[in-house]
Image (tube, rainbow, N blue to C red; front, top):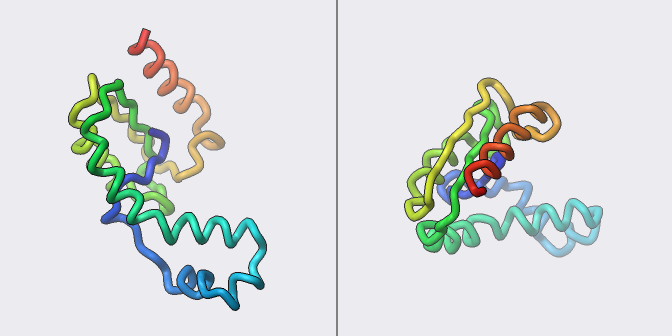
Amino acid sequence: MLAGSLDPSQERVHIMQQVGAWAPVQCLLPRVIRNANAELMALKPELEALGTILPSVKAKVVIVHGTADDLVPVANVAYMQERFSGARGISTILLEGLNHFLPWNSEGAVREALHIALERSC
């Protein structure tokens, strides 16, 4: 789970997202913005539904998250650690002072996490 947003309690719908979902405004927005807004508007209920099945995950889980992620709060880590209760193992790697864009600003740490995940599964 790389900078994963799974905790529905961490999701907030900004007033501008609600404005962007209004049909007259939607038609003025570029497609990429409309699509992103639709995904964000639906995220919380989808995460609530997902939360009920996370305990049934049996795979090993590696969680990687930056402590300075301002798009997906690091509080999601505790939620994942709790919800993946059926996993064969959970490893957590917190990257101090790093933000959401881990594949670009922490390639080495991401590769190491992948190595750990693959090593454990073989």
